[in-house]
Amino acid sequence: MAKKELLKVEGLKQYFPIKGGFLGRTVNHVKAVDDISFTIYEGETVSIVGESGCGKSTTGRAILRLEEPTDGSVVFQGTDITKIPKGEMRKFRKDLQIIFQDPYASINPRQTVASVLSEAMHIQNVLPPDQRRARIEQLLETVGLRPYQADRYPHEFSGGQRQRIGIARALSVDPKLIICDEAVSALDVSIQAQVLNLLEELQDEYGLTYLFISHDLGVVRHISDRIIVMYLGKIVEIADKNSLFENPQHPYTKALLSAIPVPDPDAVKSRIVLKGDVPSPIDPPQGCRFHTRCPFATDKCRTEEPVLRTSDIMKDTHEAACHYMEEISAGKMTPNY
Ligand SMILES: Nc1ncnc2c1ncn2[C@@H]1O[C@H](COP(=O)(O)OP(=O)(O)OP(=O)(O)O)[C@@H](O)[C@H]1O
Ligand code: SF4
Ligand SMILES: [Mg+2]
Image (cartoon, rainbow, N blue to C red; front, side, top):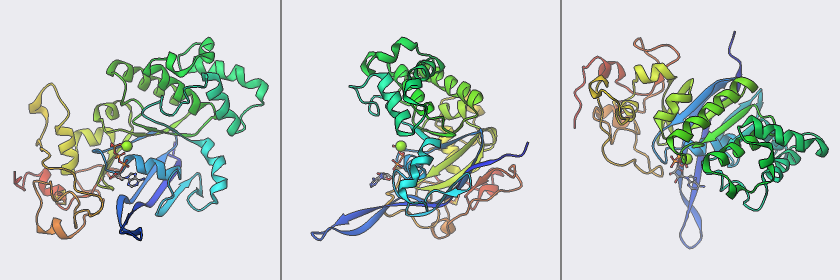
């Protein structure tokens, strides 16, 4: 079956102004997301990974227009939702839901679970009010809670249960795409696995599509179909999960993978150790943004920006942005540590 595009992001930029001086003028910008493009197909799980500050959450927020994108388009089922009047976003908010890391922070502690869920349904005008209670109880069962828990308050639940409530709230409006921003990051590993399994079951049952944002490659490995690796506001690699884990091309991706604990360290080909800190997104390095930390950087890397491209040693759906990926994979470049 041909894959159907659900969401297409093109040339997305999100620059945050920095005000300065006593006139409060814009003196510079944080280039949090700087010209990224990718497509999400119906029913798949695409993950975004990368170190803290690389622009993962900003990408998710810009897609939902929680922040107005600086440039670019976000086409959802044929409509560029960055170009419609803000007031018309309401009907798309029903299709595009987001779940955050800390479910407690996004749930009002003085509201019962039933009231949290019915509020979401009310805003989106889902079901007549007299049918909502039954739907709420059904939703709680769907996410592995009990119907009587509808009248409890958030503090009466554990972290994993609260995340289940967050999922129930997203599901209550019958969405198509759910953006999960570090949705399991705060949970213990065993609870993480349960919530990830629940997300997968719900995906099968309701044909959901996920954009899964996480700094944790272990989690991403569990849930993704495809993976986007971001570095300083740019996409540096994008591939099917297996292709990315088995045949990573970008030195940054290799470094991220080298940092995951593995039972047999020798099994990791060409270990790359990340040195130094991520540079500031206010004044990102010229050329390849990774050049200040890359052990293979040359003069060309310092001046010319590499574009995302495929190569003979990769599947054609796999792309990376590095001038030297062929040479590095062939062992023709010596790392400079
Ligand atoms: N509203 C804002 N105003 C100014 N700068 C911002 C704003 N939101 C984010 N940033 C900056 O944009 C960059 C990207 O932030 P973002 O939250 O998207 O990163 P992230 O990849 O989600 O990181 P983390 O893994 O820590 O969640 C960071 O440098 C951050 O400080
Ligand atoms: S383009 Fe150069 S600096 Fe950038 S990742 Fe490739 S080798 Fe490293
Ligand atoms: Mg984030």
